[in-house]
Image (cartoon, rainbow, N blue to C red; front, side, top):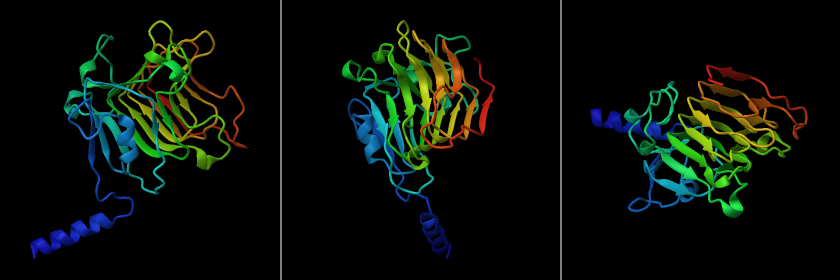
Length: 262
């Protein structure tokens, strides 16, 4: 009888709307894993999956978070495969080694760096139209190969003309984001999305001959939660506006900025 009840309950759990019945851990590393390229893992991932990047390895590619064309509210998580116990607890800012108060060794993070060359002005991480429910954790996102150009992470398009085209339900949590140490970069995150959290992360070396920002939003409605980050830019650390939104009547709203070191 107990086995029958257990099977019945498990069957009900698989039928819960939005629950992925085959949520998987997808591994990415230079050899011996399911994938050698992060983009391949993203392309194959389903809602609820976790993409585990090998700690201490560098992944040289510019990637796009795909729209999975599903109504699921389960997150696809992209993270280092080092254990959670190696990192600051939830709600604690990640501070990389070599910085005052450091609490995270660089060797524990998975490093994503752009390809450079003809890709130097392309985001290292980009989003497809309407992409949703992605979480980035325990990563080093490095703008070294961008050699001073443009945006490190682009959430949504500044030229989108409808809310449905904007990505949503995105999280950056305990991530180190930085640019070229001497050439800088224009911005850390271009925030033209809906419902996005940027928390407990470390932004460094965002400077440019013109304006620069750690976080800039021009064409997204919010809500946004920017909480407990180290934000380092030579222009405006956080900026909303600066140009007219392309979506008619859009006003960025419901923005929480709390507990950041600016």
